[in-house]
Image 1 (spheres, rainbow, N blue to C red):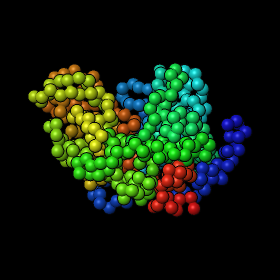
Image 2 (cartoon, one colour):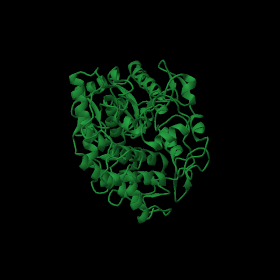
Image 3 (tube, rainbow, N blue to C red):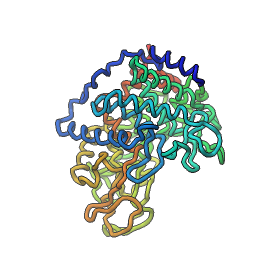
Image 4 (cartoon, rainbow, N blue to C red):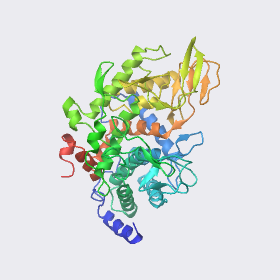
Length: 482
């Protein structure tokens, strides 16, 4: 896009580009929270604290000039493009709660979108941020350039675009900065060449590197990539080819785990990520029509099954039970076998832990984001679990930015850990907060309390187009865009 076209776009945005009539929003005041009447005062107070601390991770740790968000903190790390998508989603939530002003959020969002829009896109191996509208998985914090030899990532670009499109629809006022946000968001999304990433159509590749070309895997089967396919199908410029959604769902595995029939995916993050931005309640594709449920109910069943698995506790891990459960991708203490609590155990560092019909990988490490990201699906088990975790373990687990990434009551031995620290008599605790695990906690609790992200995204024309292209019908989608 040249300068003249950008100016034209800004003029269009000022009168409501991005599918939202400018100035017609209702966010002159914070939205009414706690529409769920089952929450008592202690539960609301706890969720207030958890959301505020988790929001502060994104507000305080993201760079205010470029808007780049670290993968983790306080350990020094590269920037995570996916975490930026969660940060962009966090800022309007902060405004709705009164933690920051609308003007502060708009400035941060504009800076972030401006950085990604102007960042160099090229096929060379270094000194660039992306290529063909897609972005590299990790970036160097100081420059925003590709980190080492990481891949140009389709899923991380999709998660970034989730936040980009949320901001496009939320910032709906007829004032210059919000107009710029809308046109920058629209341009970033339209620029992504999803079809180029279909090197083995109709599937979408995991990614590409300038050194080796496309990665050998395509996203297929239920996982975090629902959003990727929906945004690819909804593109008005480079849409995925017909048949992409059928290819994706063709890899589903339906079965029963812990008495719950559902499409399985062991780590719970796969049941969270797409749901941050897409309200799947009451809308169905052909697969869900066949089974008589929607994806929201599918995620509820996966959540309940994980709690039941922990109650059954087949491996006898310390503390597992009704209020201590939750397996997903997260940090771990070390890689190797150690003897703890009288038994030899195998532990891992960062890994996708999970339990479902596909596989069980459980080393006794619990991630609070597993329950936190599932709050809308099963609040009656998730909120008490989060409260119990904080009350039982206190500061080692719940600190400046809410819950640290992971912990394990099982590991209580005099061993050297590669990450985190051991509190004697209690267990192992991570010392880092991870952006991609903080994001679901904040946004999904907000969706439970006020429906904010879902409500805003229901009017985003690009998401609506993608859902319809994938064959979704019913519910709110029937009236969307009319």
